Image 1: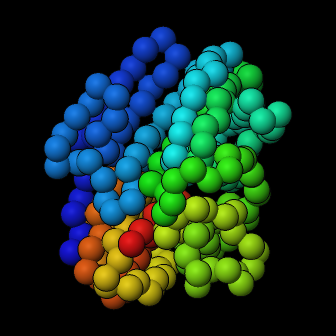
Image 2: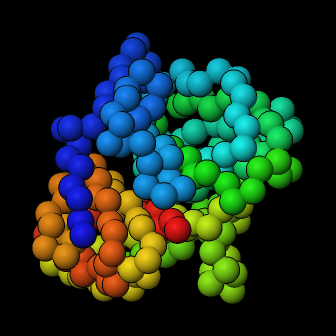
Length: 235
């Protein structure tokens, strides 16, 4: 089953520097029908204005994945990690027993990103941070960017690790092309068209639309125009 969640129907928040859209209940936006998909708890579509960002704040017992769509994000945390994450890069933060971090747009253009929170398989892990660059224009399917699934342990290139039975995948399809992605029908997924327009098992997704996927053994994805896709697969 494919449940479409149009971008125009997402939760919203806007202030002087942040323009956010929420695929799931978050902060002051609450919809009891949109709390989570399995272990996937948060998917925020954020735009951060130049010379602004999230000041230091804490997290605990959560796997937090940031997928940069445009611009450069600067990460800092109380573990001593600092990184500049550009479009096409992914960072994973293990909140574990506790971490304090800040995320800033130090550039002159807006930063556009997806921030994704996944509930960990176990609590109290050692906190940490990692980032990696992946080929943004790799075509023909969905590549695994971060994963805690046993089946992805030998994947190349090696995905960033997650303390969760989940995987973050992404890929780009050229206009008029398609791909078939195998799914375990006992698992669930959430797919977002970061850009472009696609049809997934007959359901059309426009730019920044989301789709809840359940009970499917495969996804037949066809791109009506060049499209960048991001998906989270969870138990």
